[in-house]
Length: 149
Image (tube, rainbow, N blue to C red; front, side, top):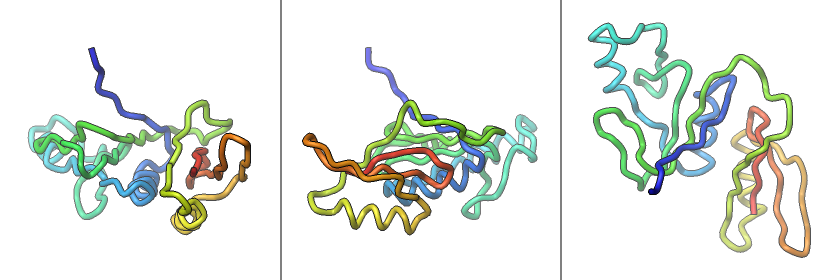
């Protein structure tokens, strides 16, 4: 049996994190507004559980980004493939990630991609040069580590 999955990332500001990662990966911020509007109309969700983002209604405490080529549920806006879900938590990140994302660039594009990600709000934490490869360790705007190869 194969399982469907998504990577969930804790965030102080899930919408800002989703915007960063959507731009970083070339993903789309999911549009859950049709489902949200339906739930609000039926009294199944309170208005205070939502915010306006990208000119549409969104969940206040969670938002996902999805690969633009992957299928999604038209009724809910939920991606059915490669996704990152950002979930609001009250505490800031306090330690090193136990899981991180590796971004693989085209040959020769690592430095240009690193600069592009810095312009989006990421920070370079270090550069690694080992016999097995070279990569840049970076942090997203909330300090989550990731690598650019």
